[in-house]
Length: 239
Image (cartoon, rainbow, N blue to C red; front, side, top):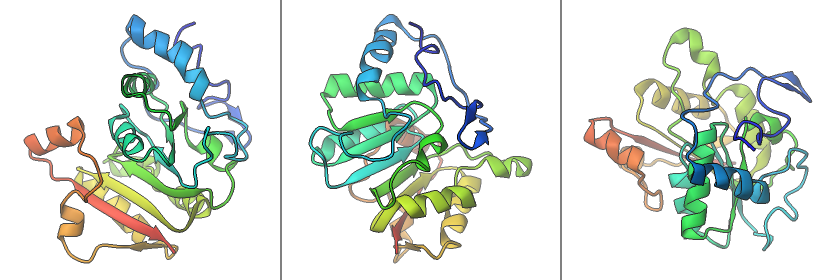
């Protein structure tokens, strides 16, 4: 079975419970190497989030008290690191890019990580089905900035996304975001600050200029530093 054939039947740009969902990102890059294709075909079905999810009960073997969501995990390096550091918690990763999903599967296999579940598609297709206050936190790390003004409607933190996250993140939970693109940084911070359901925890400039303790550095972040791109880190709490 090929990687494209193994995607959920309710895919992006298909008719879902809310009709057509426009999708603007990439679905596939280079063809997967045989080893990665095997992981995609054989390992993904074992840890894939069901598309009809309406409860987190039974999703993880040990029924974790805290469950976190990463939206757009890219190659999965950040998600694998935080999941490995907190084996008592559960983590859901959503990513529609086939090659990124395969990369995370490789991290999971090589590091024997058992507390990650994957939704290999547009996260909007499951957010409305998930139960209220089910998340201890959510991560949006280095999202596509969509810098052109005419593409502003494609940026991740729209009003509709804030509404969904406010419903899912329990009071006291966190919304954690990072970017190294000036337009994305401004957008993420302004949109979150405009929502009175979330409170920014920064007390000084170093709280957003320096990578907070416990937020792992990835190769992408290190590359950005080498290329002179300064990252910003935003930590909000759900009121």
